[in-house]
Length: 339
Image (cartoon, rainbow, N blue to C red; front, side, top):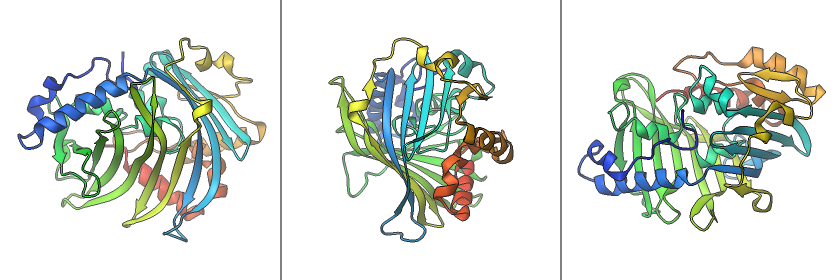
């Protein structure tokens, strides 16, 4: 079975000993092993999050909040995923996919379970996709056989408690590709603190295009830490452009409590009226036509160089962003498809 929130067979620290140079090896190996163990401890979540959509284009120092969403994201290892989107108190659709369907698609599991533009769901913060349809733990698994190269990073000057490393596909050096830079928080169970996407040109020039940062953690089950507040920012030509600010509704959220697949089946929907890529949807009538038309118009090519971008981002986003802002967001996320 493919993995989702974590690799099915956890890495032990010793498994990673020989993938790093001597300098920084021990600290990074230990941090990666602890991260994998921590993520493996979160078997399910039912998270309600409040997401502010941010526009930096007019006022870079103080971004404008252009829309507010209150979304429910439900995820359970081996069972499935559910997403309920609400914009300004109005339903923008409910989608479900069961585990069997997700694992039987032609896509990697992370991509099959991906539902909307990064930033609007809780999964984007607790265990984001690391390119090529892989969750971060799956990408780390590829460092064992050298498919993915891992390199320690220097400590951040403003926060020495963070342990950083970089992931890159060594076969793509000298070509246009992406690298991911990651920092784990040693004071919060070695959970993911910062994740940056950088584009690399054929000449080696590196440009930051996207940054996720957890601002606050919440302790659950007395042992695990999860994101309570976080942000995802798209960067264009060296400046912040658009993004999201997420806050977990702690009272309406739970972890490791889901035992059945009832929430992930089509019969759990009030009325199923749309299906795409294994996902089954209940869209409000006013949005159903939009979903069909925009899915056909905006979906990006499905190949190894582009992440799938569906028009579900269009539902509500067009009223929030200028057309130029939306185009930049689409371009940035398409470029994040491969590392």
